[in-house]
Image (cartoon, rainbow, N blue to C red; front, side, top):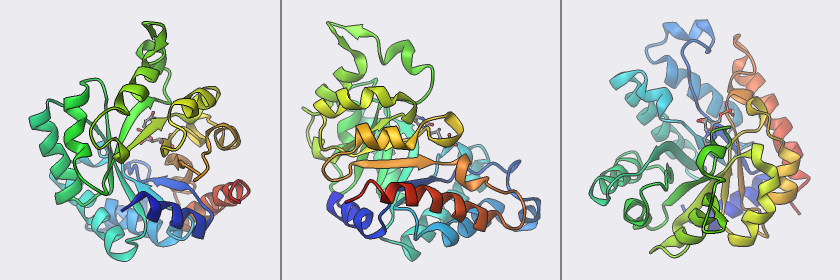
Length: 270
Ligand SMILES: O=c1ccn([C@@H]2O[C@H](COP(=O)(O)O)[C@@H](O)[C@H]2O)c(=O)[nH]1
């Protein structure tokens, strides 16, 4: 998917909501456990109930890898279902990959070719040659971890090196890499006070923003300080939406939560 297609979808739906599909068999409604593939059955119901309210879905691969081969099959069925039924929706494999170039190329093939995701999250720690193999895929997007939503972000990412915080080095240096137009960045909603500085370095790039809801981040502040001329935000909520109810009405309850967020977002789109 091109960035322009993503922007058109945002303007059409008046939403920049990304729903995180982080499926935990201990949290889904009990009646689904008798299905042949409970994870896919859960995702299908959530997608059917929310696709008109969001512009992106983000399965975190950990929640599928934890169930071995069966989990990976559920992930494959989920991405195929989204791509078949709602090809306009942007898909994110939250896998946080990155390795020596030779290995990164295989990660990129796995997520962009085999699973046909539009984007994958990648850790910047191993540098240019670990990220460029992902960037080589045109109309696929590499979402680099810049300033994450967790407390541990302060261990390294905000430390000053040569007069500048590490996350700023990540933003500035990554802009010089080949095919950097295919980059987006992860910035946590819990770090709203950093958005103005971040926008000085990357005014137009899309930011994937996790951390609203369950982690305490605030949608209003993220929009106020993080929005670009072309919106430039994908705000993710996972647990806050998909576990709104653990009863038979779980999909409708998820749609109500997603609709509340979409309505708040609508106010920021002109
Ligand atoms: O900085 C980061 C990067 C990724 N995540 C992931 O996003 C979702 C958040 O889930 P919630 O239930 O809405 O808290 C999850 O998959 C994280 O692994 C993040 O939270 N922060």
